[in-house]
Length: 124
Length: 115
Image (tube, rainbow over all chains, first blue to last red; front, side, top):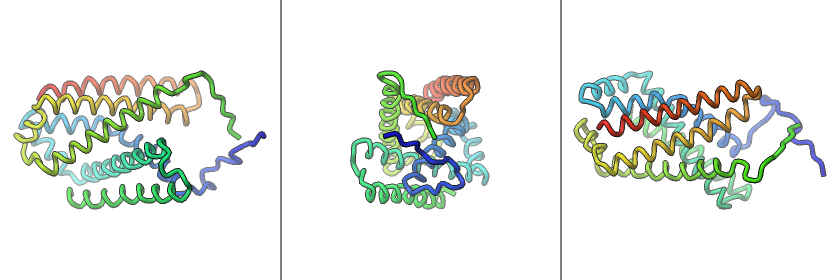
């Protein structure tokens, strides 16, 4: 048996099923978190180093643009965390049937978005 | 058509393990952190600093951050292997990512132990 797969890799023609969407968002969110590591380390450092730097940290996170970035990163973190836990579950052969995989991927996508909105409103 | 050539007896197994073990470490630290925020929220600079002045918290935070950097290495390497086909460009970016992560590890050490 020699199948030539996939037939095509035209991104505009591929309609991803939900588990595929969760998977590519897992990758994109991980990449985004990597890019913003220096910002996050800087915030951690400022928050801890001294009372003066703590004030700078508070000023920095009060900026609307910074809030938007941090809420975006919060979604990236939450999605990456829950999608990652789902992948660990799949690694251990839990929920690998098509129906279970679809419903767990919907749950992961939903939890990430809902928690981001709830925490985002709370933190703004 | 994608031709997939798999070589080597233990190809990628160590990275696969690092990715998962570091993921579990980070998930546990996240859980710890959320519990702290719920049950003993540090509401001002003094309390926040006191939290990280604790030796156990320093060690846990450092282990979390090192896990994060190892995890980021495996993930970024996967991404670069998938999308950057010219070998020179891919290797250069891999070196850049690796050096950045080593630098972040030094930075993390400084942050955690200057409290």
